[in-house]
Structures are given as C-alpha cells and as structure tokens.
Image (cartoon, rainbow, N blue to C red; front, side):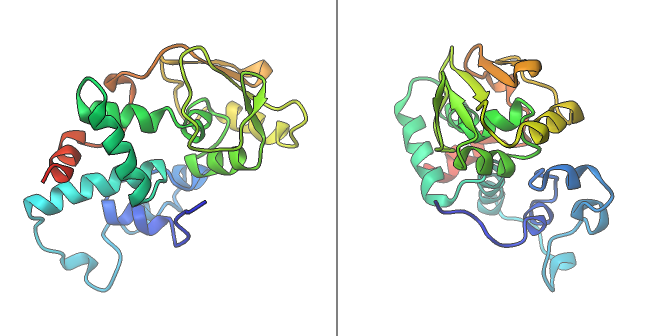
Length: 207
C-alpha cells in the first residue's frame, strides 16, 4: 500500500491552506499554517507568480493531498471519471469522496483521512456486516459502515465523534450510539466542501 511518508505539514504550507492531514493538531496553534504561512524551503518567501500550468498543477496536487492518494491512483480515478456520464471534474471528486477511508473521516469516526485510512487498513470497520480492510473501497447508496464490535478502538472512535470537528454531510447519516453510518445518496458537488477547482484538473489532464 503506497503512501506519502514525509512531513505532512509541509504539504499544507506548500498549498497555502489547511489540508487537515494531522487531525486534532490542525485545530490548534501548533498548525504549520498558523505558525509559518508560506511555502517550505530556502526560497519559500520569494516564489514568483504561477503560470497557468502551475495553477492547474497546484489544484491537482491539492486534491491528491487532501484525499491521500498518489499520482498513479489519482490518474486512474480521472480516467474512470472520464468514462462516466456527467461532468468529469464532479465525477472525479465524487469517486474520491466515496472512498471508505474518506467516509470514515466524514462520519467523524476518525480525526483525519490519514487516521481513517489506518483504521480501515487494520480491519476495524465493516461494510454491510462484512469486514473491509481496503481504504480505497468505494461505498454505494444503502451501504452501512460500522465499527466492528470486537474493535479495540471503541473509546477512540467515541472521542472523535464527541469532538465534533466537522459537520456530517447530507449524503451520510450517523448513528453515533451504534457507531454506525449509512450512505443515503451519492454526494453532489455542493456536498463536497473542499477548496479545489476541479475544472482546472480536467484541463491539466486533457492537454
């Protein structure tokens, strides 16, 4: 399972916004954006103006880093979105949003997508009563995502739910007492609250 292993806070500083990659830390004064809101590196304060290609590239990198996927997998999602009916950019974001690790995060079970990915990979969640340990598993309408009864993360998940760091999107429904979530519908663009201009990603890959 490929993943980014270097410093996560550098990614937020490079994009100039909070990507919420480190969970609870992102809500404190220790957040890198709060302390050093400029790109990392020796010339971080002296970077020039971005070219049109650079703007498109930054939007693509931002989307990749928010959802925690690498280039090869992200390109796979884009080609998949191209073959689907509808607006390619919106379909791309919908595919990323339906990943199980993202759903676990959106439901409040995990403080970040990274934590959600780890929880899923370690087999702490089940979909429709069946254990699923693949973070990229795509949920469907009607699916039930639940913490396994035998999981040792009961207290941790309850703490994350009680922290209430984010609002549950309309396309999901949370039953906090049972630590269970239901997929009510597929997410619409207005349900995906991330600061990404998906049309620029489509333009970049269409060259």
